[in-house]
Amino acid sequence: MSRRGRSGPTISLFSFQDIITSVTAIVTVITLLLALDLVQRKQSQSSDSSSAMAVALIEHLERAEAELVRLRTVAESSDELGREAAVTSPAELRNEIAQRESTIVELERERKKLEQQRQKWLALKKEKLSEQFDLEPLKDEQRKTELAASELERQRAEEQAENRTVFTLPRGLQKEGWLAVIDSQQITVAPLGLAAKPTTFVATGLTLFGSSAVGNFEKWIVDQRLSSAYFLLLVRPDAAVAFDKAQEMLERKMVSHGFDLISADQKILHPDRGAAP
Image (cartoon, rainbow, N blue to C red):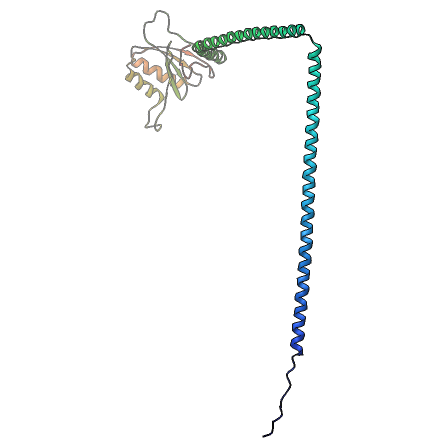
């Protein structure tokens, strides 16, 4: 039997070998680059460590030199003190020590004196505070008295500014006295000689069915049982009609009374003290 020849395309491995070769070359280059970077970093770290060590050594050297200068200064001072002590005699040293001890004693004596003065000052301050505490009630009383005097002065000034006329009972009259100021629309009464708020009577209700000021005044006299009292009627210029009605009412009830004329703006009654001075 004869051998048959191979048929079909031929397989070539040259492309695969090229790829493998290229990849190997790339990996080799990357490895070299990484090795070079590691070497450079190692050198840089060594350089930084050397610089830091050099700076630390310089600082330590500067501190050592400063300490050396200080020790030299101390040594020179000690030498100077030693020379002075060598020059000074023992007698002079004893005198100087005695003078210093005397100065210390004098300063201690002065300190004690100042302490005694401080204690006296504190005791005096405490005594003053105690006296001030004891005087507080007196000061409060003085302030109250001053306020009362100020209030009286204010009232006196108001009275002078008011220019108010004050009426009193006729001499020898033993009855209870009342002052009645008659205006056209109202009647205001207050006790004579006593401090009391005035009482005012006005017309109430309708004109035909209500009560007049005189009617309310009459009712008040009955309620207060003042038939035996004395009334001084002070009549304003526009109150003639009201005065006639009031006088007629008092005569009908046989109430003692008198009258006088006052001006339209004359002040007679105080809003709080009434007819009292």
